[in-house]
Length: 552
Image 1 (cartoon, rainbow, N blue to C red):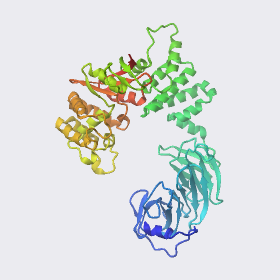
Image 2 (image 1 turned 30 degrees about the horizontal axis):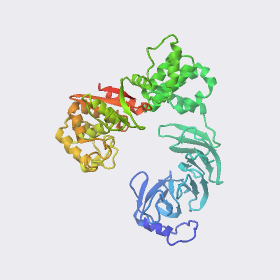
Image 3 (image 1 turned 60 degrees about the horizontal axis):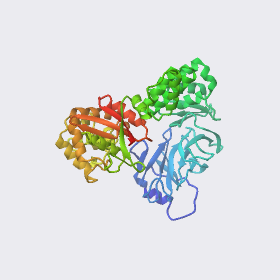
Image 4 (image 1 turned 180 degrees about the vertical axis):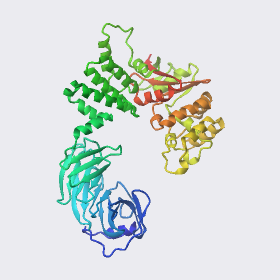
């Protein structure tokens, strides 16, 4: 890249406007991905964009003149250049050029992320000869941009910038007049692409989920009601909440039916938080329309997914209103209610409480976390175990998933290996092969792989300092290969989601394995915990207990 950078930067000198190149020679261009390009003749490696007609290619590099520092920096401009039929016709520099687009006539735009810190950016547009059309300083970070095929209109979107007049906007520019002609807030969400109809003066925002939303050049949406109906049917909770803010519509039975259908769709989402929020909104709507019994069912289902979804008191109040004559045997603690909703056991364990967040089992015990004190309580009952949340199980799965773990994978997270979220093909293993290895694992294999996993930190895995070899070997002996492979199989369905939420304690006694989530008085269950319990542990028949720690 030094050849191009030397021409652009050289010794310090005053800024000058770019000039067309005289009789440029055709360059040999190598594209090695959809966005990256190399040009050996000018020693260039960077990103590129091609005009729709294929005539022009815009290239840019967000690196300092020496080519040694890319991305965030406080000095050292990046560069851009325009090629026509692979001949260099103009070149220039910007602080941090990004997201280039080039039209069929050679007009092009770039986002300049600018040097240094702060929420700021500069949207720039140039003619085919490299002369500037506009340079708009913006008090917000820039996201994507778009350019019409004929080079007459361009758009950029800005990110959130609290207190800035430029925060969260689409900005539309007429490049012929070099002026901003409209701006509007992203009601339809952020776009992944843009399509222009310059004759009808309409702009269409496109998204990867196939959603396509049209706007007039003045910034008003085309067929807003149709878009809202599509988003409701798709279970878009943001749009649903926006529509529910109009209380008058709640009296319309058809409107309520459409909203309920959309909420039912959202309640099937893969994200447990989305499902819980959908059920909460459904409960609120049903309660408002007078169906208290159905509302309570929705609230309880939401709380079973995410105990912190925010309707506990509302559900309790509604429960009392629906059964005014009933008198409960006793008032349930919040942990009993949470355990009941998740469908797990609840028990109270008494521990000695000292300084804030310090507990111990028995008057002579060592002060420790509430989880360590609870572990001592169960050890006194004859259990073995570890207070390591998911660290123990994930380490065991990793040690069992390879007949012989390679040193290069010693510190790779097991969720990344199961999801194939790795950079090199040699680190890409099929899910079936990993699970099959668990089903054939031996103590010798586990020991050999454990030694490699723990080597970088001494006696424990680098990321799970509470896990020791006797924990790994003890749990493996208790589980056996069949049950371990069954856990790995469910984990493999969503490894990144299921890496979190494992109960605090993993306990075993002979062949019996159980899990305990420990809660101090100020704690609460979390959505990740209920997801893990209901996705892996309950379906496989493990005993799961919510242990409520109370001071003696």
